[in-house]
Length: 339
Ligand code: DAH
Image 1 (cartoon, rainbow, N blue to C red):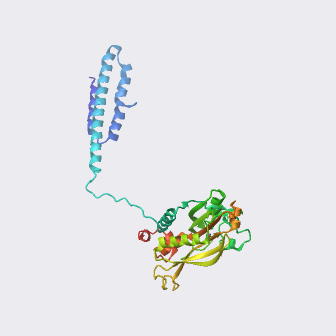
Image 2 (cartoon, protein in one colour):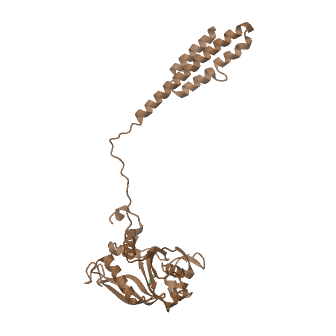
Image 3 (cartoon, rainbow, N blue to C red):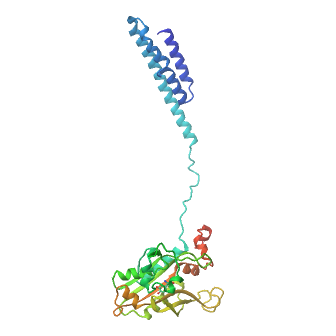
């Protein structure tokens, strides 16, 4: 082999051998086999060599190139293997360490209370239905016998999107929606979120939840209403619970009532929990107003019905003896995990 070529080859092999990583190895490849590399330059020398010596010279250059290429390849494999081994060593997994515990979620007290209410009414043959949170004022008010200018609109002051559309202030519009579908008899509850422009305090929030109830059939009377809600109260607060119906006014029911349950803490004697009353108010109800039935396409001469509306948060607060509604919205796990 040509002296100089021999020197270049040996130099290359020594450099390859001294490479510590793949970057260095690549630099050596470029230095010898790259476009301007030493071996590539030797190839270009060909034209300065007498024609009869060219084949022999060409062969020498090929041999030199093959040697360097083979050495580069071998070194590359060696370095890659070393790299892999190092990685394996640094990424050792200690299979004896305790596993990370998967955190299992927990039902929110409102959700637990809702499940309980749904269980009770589904057990009595009710359907659970939902309605939109963004509602026509027509359904939220007019069809519930609350015409424009009626003071009840102010009492439930809410968030208007425009003159016609608002965030529903009660779940009662679901009544009108279900009645309009015309499938009778009706036996349903409608849980859902409602909105009022109230400031936040221990008993108020601009967004809370209600559960609406509605039964429409032939021969439904006030005794059905009283029996149903009495049974509901006993299921929810315990078999000793008594109910008391006080006359009240709601525009969409006639007659209307507010319902109290006997205090489940003191049994009705009067305590701090019931503020000495012995009774705790839990919901509003009444016989569906004939005018509401009519507006929703039901003949009030043939059908009658009862309705009720209960605050979900109120039930959760009472059932779990929580004294501040705000706790329900803070998502503090220390609080939520207690239920
Ligand atoms: N929608 C009423 C409110 O938000 C609650 C209510 C009272 C619903 C009586 C009813 C009912 O269906 O009959 O204050």
